[in-house]
Length: 537
Image (cartoon, rainbow, N blue to C red; front, side, top):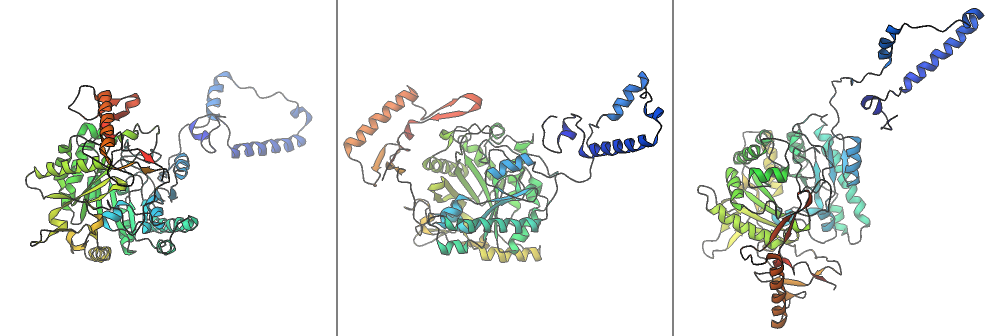
């Protein structure tokens, strides 16, 4: 036999190995023949075996061959194959039913230990240790180069599988998430009060893996989450504009904008749809119709999509979304499904620079609202741009600008449930905003880190330098003390040598991109040579 999995070889390889039922039938026939032979005469038992004509051999052999055609069934198949299920479970996913999953976010564990929350805590005020990361659809229509799931999940253009009940999915996800929270009790440093509060889910990030908006009962699932007083952050890759248009109000709706041109979109997202660019444009245009918070999410991948910022501005203008998130890609190790390397992950100051350029490009487009930088979360290499008309309040006397990017979650739940009962009731972005604390604002000394928590670093992972000038030359040491003149002069000399080594006589660029095997792009930038140095403390 071919050695395939049980139940697979009969249908797929055609090896002809008889099924168990056939073997048992053969045994029964043999037993009956033996009993009959005892009643028959000795002459009959000694008779010659039956002879078959030559022309009858072909049809007889065909009749005994196993059928290669699969039995047609009206039942839709399950989304995840056994092989995919094993791979996903190995990555830490807890599978729910036939197409959903939940996983514990590392930021949930961080904040349980008082070591800081995720960027959503800084930007929008979620409680990271009460946030559940889940998906009702493991399938996706893209195979993005930066996907940290390493493409262990299925891909498809449309839904073609069994559909699990949305209430079952929500309840199972909560049960599994709370079980994982309970398992963290033995982790050193977990704070008891946060651990107990973590048993109550308050937020759901529908961004774990796959495309959640593909799930046919997504509106029912969202409604059930809101009924449980759970806020919803839904991320879509912008390939299903019709589903976006019919979506019920969510706390915050994201569309991933991964590339500024049709060509780079194909390179980066590797979409299944041949009209992926047009679908993305239509999806962004749909955001204008939404009354609640909408987000254009840009994942910055150096050497792939960090240039042509003007193209991003034109895409964002299609939907005049409430918020723009820029986040540097996180390198998750090498895999056969991705050709990224560590040099493709930008530093925080590089993401900030792109955000400033994007703001300038948006200002040049007539007829759209003004955007400005509101918040930063350095730990995640994330920057937040917001519409000034929706999130900023300027004091006419002092000129001080108060940002209101945080969310009044109780107010949103009230408004969403009222809309669910009466679809004619409408509400907007400004109806559930809340003040942003000073520590979360761009330029704050905390750099987006909640001062009620404590920053944890490994003993041998403290930055050797904490501040740099515009060229990338260090100005302050690991204790945030200014460097002396002689030390800075020596560091400047070393950088000039590195520039000549990498750039030669080319003074028009600060970095070099080299394409190597399998399309991998490696960047060399002398201005970053001192950024990654660490010391033991």
